[in-house]
Image (cartoon, rainbow, N blue to C red; front, side, top):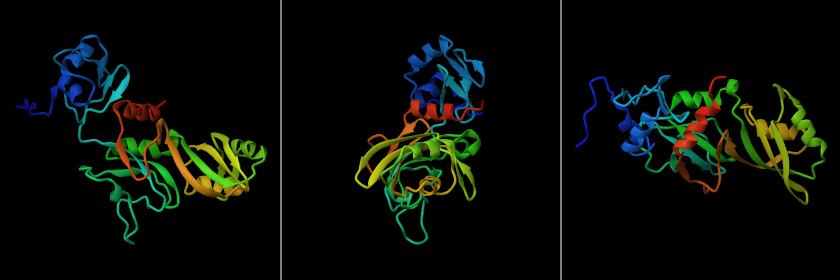
Length: 248
């Protein structure tokens, strides 16, 4: 029979850690006893109780999300799917691929319908805001198929910066992955969030994009996730996202 929570919503810290996937209650107690757990800026002690909804918990310096209502999902968005939860024109939308996710989640940023690859979905509004706000500069990496061949000057131009109609933009990293006849595959990393920014950037340097796949958002990589599938982020992955948006 589950133990009741306190009237103020607090539970024993080791129980909260176990529910968050840190380890068993005994293992969590050991972490607390060794001073490896910090709650709201203070080293925790055995016997502490916390509210899992509001407590800010770190284990070994890594953020732990204790609110089990929060979900963090990676999706490999197929080409042709619009980045909305429902589409009034009847086109395929993100919600068509979520299956049995009970919580109401929202996409973090967008991919245009013709682009594909990694999308993050969550109901954690604070983290979503930080991941998309330009002040945090979270990089996104794309694999683009472009018109070739590419002279070496293209990479130098992109890294130095290009002037677009709505202001300058530059790549954080750029490399040619493969060249095949009159097309090339390039990897470009950019922390900009303006609409169609990668397509516009490559068009400006004379190499329009025919296919665009986002392969990473900050520390989270698409990996071998199949097109149209989703997966829950692991605790270490969620912690890495919090590190990516920590205030300086």
